[in-house]
Image (tube, rainbow, N blue to C red):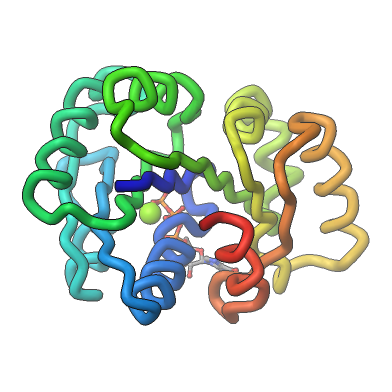
Length: 195
Ligand SMILES: Nc1nc2c(ncn2[C@@H]2O[C@H](COP(=O)(O)OP(=O)(O)OP(=O)(O)O)[C@@H](O)[C@H]2O)c(=O)[nH]1
Ligand SMILES: [Mg+2]
């Protein structure tokens, strides 16, 4: 089993990207299982994922990168035992910085052959989020193997270029890609650098 974690602030497009990637991955014959960490006690994103026909486990009432780390490890073990998927895709809450979470997973689940963090950047709300939650966004970027600047349909090329500069300063090594999850633009290339 391999693990893909899709991080990014609230509303950055995690579920939209997850559903698109899941669709193309399952078309190529890969078996997937999904973990949704929901902030409230209503499984909105889990509902969408289930509608798409994918096995999904929801983790409520806390954040998997802080209070629910053990819960996540148990959930991953259960999914592995029940479905033995090729990939498990985890969507943490938008408030998660996935660095510690990935350390825990790598420590307690050494059988996971490959683990990747994709962090999404919300291009449309970049300026506002930099002013309000810059430390969290930076922590999400630091933890990433791959960074996707999403919603490029909402902004000018110059804005995307400026975002990429700041993103590069936060993470010197991650692959950076431009995508629009709603139009599907760039998602094929993104998948290529993730899997
Ligand atoms: N214009 C535009 N809108 C997008 C894009 N990707 C996602 N959205 C929209 O942004 C909103 C939030 O998308 P979600 O996929 O639910 O984002 P999320 O990160 O899963 O949100 P939470 O789980 O609530 O943190 C939805 O209305 C999407 O349709 C994009 O590339 N362009
Ligand atoms: Mg979501």
